[in-house]
Image 1 (cartoon, helix red, strand yellow):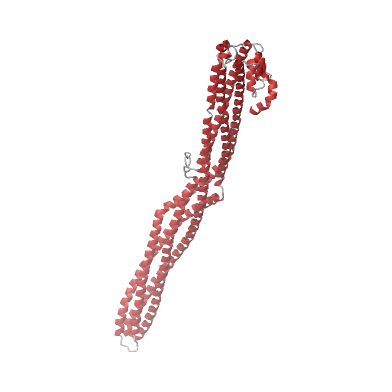
Image 2 (cartoon, one colour):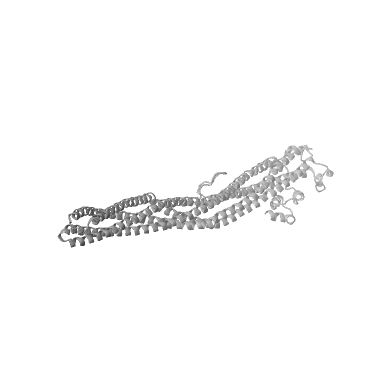
Length: 598
């Protein structure tokens, strides 16, 4: 037969036949089958998520402590040194210009003195000519003044040459001083502001690096709490996953009830039924109608409850999965905020962007470039200072030569004066010239001493300038070398940081995509809900055809289904509708399962 009862009238009244029951079973199978597959995927996703989150946690902690490693500490220490040195270089630059200005003034003073010396030499020229005239007029044959004439010419020529040479050396010296001064002024004009700016920027970088280190340490501590939240979410997801197995079992129980409905519709002989169901063949028509209606009413409730519980748990599972997606995005964003400069999370394959370390490295690179500029400029300046020192030494030798000539000239004048004194009136004219020559010699000596004193003072200033410049040059060179090492440190740190950050954000992106795809697969809840609605629509009429609370119906339902229930909810639903279920017995048999799921 193709009805629940072996009566055509019953089939016509209820609208339920074997074909419909089998259609309900097929629909139930279609609704149940995807659940297990979908939840297996979710389980695998959670397993992979757990592994990825562990990797993400390790990466985040590694990023947090990276800046505290030896390279980071060394870089910070060198940054502090650079600020001190750049401030010192700026002060040294000002002092260098002051010294060169002073040397320039000394050169002008020497030029004036050499002018005086040239004037005196000019006067000696006139005296030499006059001496020759006066010596010719002396008639004494005992005294020969030809030697005097030759010597006065020679000494005059030597003095003139030495003075001219000194003037030439001074001109070269002034050019060297002017070139050094101009070079220092140009460097100061072009780089003084940069020196101050580099100092400020480096201090800012040092403060930024220190703040980043502190922030990273705090982030590492906060991350421990975030790891706990993520673990709780994953545990919640795993707990929610149990609803898949439980729902499949509950739908299986509904399927068993549909098997009973199919037997009632076919009305087979007792011998064709399983031993525990042979009693169904003995039921009369009225009892069969009432039992079928009760089974339909019970399964409507069981299906509705199963669908409601499943929907609630799936919603909870989705919420936890979505929270995990947000956690992964938040971890990536926090890492980017802490260690990178990009405001938006990069897509797969995109560059991360510059980090705090990269910004610090750029500042260090600018400082290093300026230090190299300073060293190159200072190399030229020191060459000029050495040239100036050599120029002063040459002028000193020139002045010594002049003073030596002056000494000879004074002795010659003294000897001539003595000779002229012995000659009486005849030697008076030449004696006067000899005295004038000695007077010029004294003036020459005074000017030479003044020039010597100016040269010594300028030489001391040039020597101090050279020493100070050399000391600063060594400091700048050593610092430039240390800065190069700092750049290597910062580049290594930046490369490690960018690699770790790239891997971390990539892992977070993987988690987001993995979980988002999994969430999309949980649309099976709508499929089960639609199946539950169709089930109610197709069996609701049959549930009203019989007297579901007729005598013995509760016992029959208890006999058929009580031992099947694995969920407390199924037993409560059964008891609420029909009562009489042996809850204690069911709990003893299935309590361990309930404890596991609930």
